[in-house]
Amino acid sequence: MRKSSSGMSRALVRRETTAGYLFLLPSLFFFIVFVIYPMFMCIYTSLFDSNMGKNTVDVFIGLDNYKELFQDQIFLRALKNTIVIVVVSVPTVCAFSLWVASAIYDMHPAFTSAFRCIFYLPVVTGSVAVTVVWKWMYNNYYGIFNYLLKGAGVIENNINWLGDARYALWCIILILFTTSVGQPIVLYVSALGNVDKTLVEAAEVDGATKTQVFWKVKWAQIMPTTLYILVITTINSFQCFALIQLLTSGGPNHSTDTVMYYIYYTAFKLYRFGYGNAMGVVLMVIIAILSAIQFKLGQTDS
Amino acid sequence: MLKGKSLTYRIVAFVLVVILALLFTFPLYWIVTGSFKTQREINAPAPSWWPSEWTIKNYETLMSKMKAPLWEFSVPFSQYFNDDGTATVVSTGPTVPAAVRWMLNTIWMAAAAMLLTCLTAALAGYALAKKRFIGRTLIFTLIVCAMALPKQVILIPLIREMNGLRLYNTLSAVVYPIVGWPFGVFLIKQFAEGVPGEILEAARIDGAGEIKTFTTIAYPMIKPGVGALAIFTFINSWNDYFMQLIMLSSTKNLTISLGIAKMQAENSTDFGLIMAGAAFAAVPIIIVFLIFQKYFTKGITMGAVKG
Image (cartoon, rainbow over all chains, first blue to last red; front, side, top):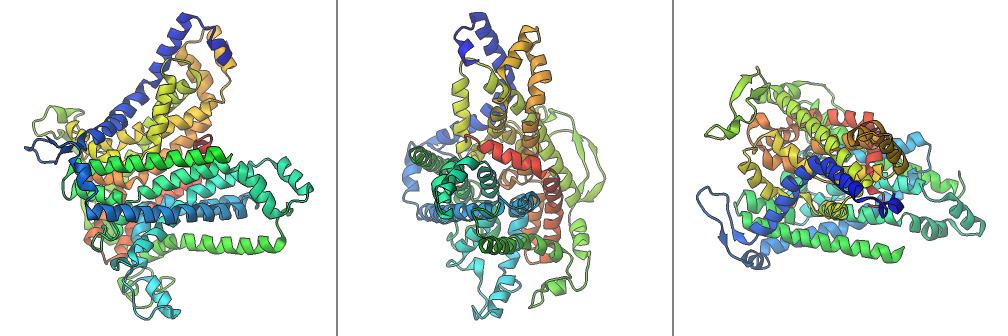
């Protein structure tokens, strides 16, 4: 196809273009109306003092929302929390899922498939169902954690896990972890299964140890997968919302706010749409930069 | 197959994985058993690992607590002609437990999102992979960039847009943005790359039109990809809590996840009731997942190739 494209007649090019766009039309309609347009509006409204009120008119205020943003202690704290979540959860999720995947990928196919399902279960169960049961397990009086830890003598008095600023964020990270490893495990299992066996055997014949085989041969081959997992886990961790909203509502005293939750809070509790959108833009920029860096790193590595 | 890993390591790893797997299933176990425990047992100082006396009281409360009409059919597009912006209802179903209505809403929402996504993505993915037209690279770049951005940040502008379109607080407001999300197009494009150009060329020389070429030759070849996308979209839209949360407000329009969240907010310590709700919401989708998990796994891995 590539070769013949230079030799395509003009009529054929026109025909291909028309057909191409007709095929694309339904998808482009939804994409432009419900993704691109709101994305544009997000940037545009971030320059306005805009709220949902029926009679008030948006006032253009330039970059004032952004200026306010970087002096807003709650936002900065939310940003810090988000970064903590990302920095803690991304490496642990990657390492954990790589280990689990390497342990299960060469088992009997039925076992591999069963374990893969089990680790995916928390994702399928849905954030609401998962969160409400964890909320119960963390509960001060009826929760299983306090009961078990007291029984084991680790703690003396019941801990109010979600109500204590020292623990709340870590409790959230733990739940996020269980709902984040499913997809990476599926991806790693498939990537490890596709590793070129002849290379592994050649290395073994040459006397390479298991560890060497893993890091020198397999690791390089699953690098694209690792990269993809880094990107999706980062994006997922940045988007952590449902857990916060259902567990702590950002409390106690904004100590568990994430950027995503604070955006929601600003827009739907304070009705400051412009300000919320400014945060959205900042979040977009941060994620775009991080994704770019991760891809760059991946390219130099392989 | 033992080559490369020692037997001891394998046994230790197996045991560890089994323990982890048990820990991962525990929340689900706790939901299901909790939903059958009596209030007294749940509020006892020591949790019971297995319900000592099974009760369906929690499910009865779930079904009696809130009520909603089973369906409401309205005149299509009538919201654009009525002054108050609401649709004209022509038929209202019998009053049933709200949880039943929520379940119907969720199934309807996920199925609509799935069908529309598959249809639009199959056409677009095929065109992007197999048609050589002007602007193709630009569109594809846009799609990849949009995918890397967090979906949630566009939800605030989306609310206003939906308000303007008079779709706010309807299931359509949840469905359309899911359809617009370009992951499906990307997935099908990866799949359609594998369709040999020669066959399409041959069909064209034989005089088959574009649509016929697509339906008889290309579609059968990308069908596994569409299947994977279908199940992927169904499960993900079922669980897309944030989108549902901001788009739906009145009790009768909620999805099951939202309904449970609402009950949780109103009866935060009635854990039995909340677990019954959680089980009611989670079990159907888990069954769907287990039945179709092969396709689902394929959808996840296909999306990552050259990602």
